[in-house]
Image (tube, rainbow, N blue to C red; front, side, top):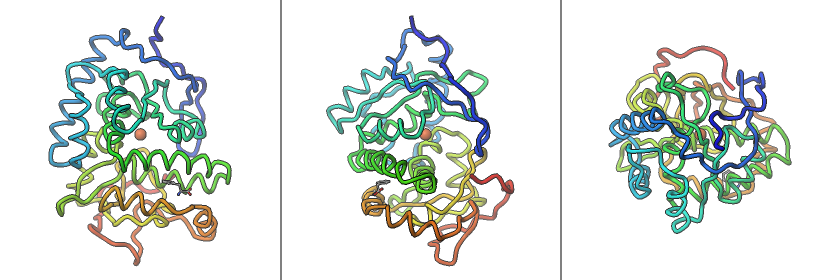
Amino acid sequence: MSPAEPRRVEHLETDKGYVPVYTTTVIDQPWASYSPADHQTWATLFERQRQILTGRACDEFIDNQQRFGMTPDAIPRFDDLNEVLANATGWQLIGVEGLLPELTFFEHLANKRFPVTWWIRKPEQIDYIAEPDLFHDLFGHVPLLLNREFADYMQAYGRGGVKAHAIGSDALVNLTRLYWYTVEFGLIRQDGNLRIYGSGIVSSKGESIHCLESPAPNRLGFDLQRIMRTRYRIDTYQKTYFVIDSFEQLMAATRPDFRPIYTDLLAQPAIAAGEILASDCVFQRGTGEGWASGADV
Ligand code: PHE
Ligand code: FE
């Protein structure tokens, strides 16, 4: 019997709002249980995003999605994607019910396992869903796991997460901000233009355009410690995006041991999501139009 509904174990009221927590069970993707409506949701989102992302997402993202053979025709099978991954970077997709406890998530990444939510959003959630679903995880995160540098970064992040978890909650907050501003909402410079690589952006119709074309947000050069001090919002478009020059730059900047950095950061105040510092490399100073106040995480 395949699960028809995801199994939430509890809901937590946190500083990020109402957050569902799921079982840590790893499950086989119940592919046969997807309904025609589920496949249609995949098709609609896939076609819409591919159109928007041509010329907006970085080349590696588009190329690797093609290498995987992802198409709008049907929700991809994890088994098929895993064959491609195994030969390329040795990563493996595992099916999960949804967001995992932090340490469990880090341990998967450290072992080159990427957890993918098996269920897809309902038709009425097509434009917005507050938690990650199959479309976000698969369409958004999985393509770059075929890229050697990026895949290595994800594994290093997982190991770093296990370490930060042992150090304490301040270190975890710093590290989570790095994930947010790179893996989820990162921009990259390619041929002199800004392009998207963040999964939170590529799986969002509105933000895919907003992050590059709107005058509202700040676009700043990547700066490790600065990012680790920067708060963010989870319920609106980002006020600030950070731009890397290459995945190699990201790897090089994050290679050093973070322990002394975590210690230094204890003495430095957090930075609001929309703030610009004198030391920032500014590609674009946002107008701040439409920004909601407060509620930074
Ligand atoms: N170098 C980091 C540490 O020592 C690990 C890490 C690598 C974290 C890549 C994030 C991204 O903790
Ligand atoms: Fe994500």
